[in-house]
Length: 348
Image 1: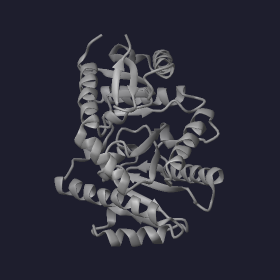
Image 2: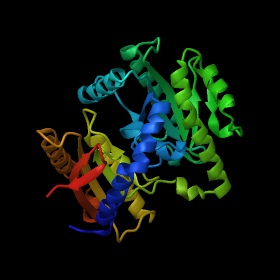
Image 3: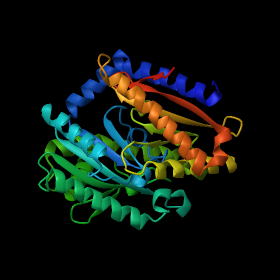
């Protein structure tokens, strides 16, 4: 069924896929990879404000996102553990190192603009994230020969990154005024003295981009209301790089044993956004499910289609039981994403 929000999603994907696949952007992305080859992943919350490419001025396709409520992950989860292991071995097969940004978030100005996944308890979020960082080290090595996990906080009022060092040091990028690469490099070396030069050098653009972004936010005097939840889309599955608009979608990866909990939490946030008038009631909200594939031939694409159908059915039933008041406002779209082009094909 067509609706304004569904039409927006289809048009947005069409435009973003065309940009992602264009010669200029493709060549620029390849060039960036040649200069900064380290593979970078981000474990982060489903919160739509955590748009790392946007807040670090990094090209889409460079930072590999993994999302779940509160940024809560466990390498013991079979599917998630396999994905991370495959990602690391992909990097190794190309002679690349890996940096994993293990993130939590909060609001400096208002507790209830923080992370609902941890009931707005920033200390609990940080403690959980530190344990997750330690788990990554347990699996991939404490010497950081190939994989270096970093604990990163994100302050959503200013979009500032806060980096936690290996000896307990804390660097709040939002308090810096200097954009000089050497200054950033020195700070990173102080935080991570055992980090390989290549990894450190490949983190520079992210930190420099975040400094530039923070300066732009301050100059624009962004209203505090822009830092509040305004999501209108609940996206479940994989392959949502094209959807990375600030504060537009809650994105949940299909990783945990209990997928119903983050689904219900996200649905309640959307209902609250509708009730509070933060999003247009006449447009409603969208449930978007996606399966991801690379190979057009063989079963991979068809398996992705079945995943998208199954996720859609599960999500609708969860919302019907847990957040029934959202159902009259819900528009549903399921499909598959070609990871080579980011093009989304709706299911028939």
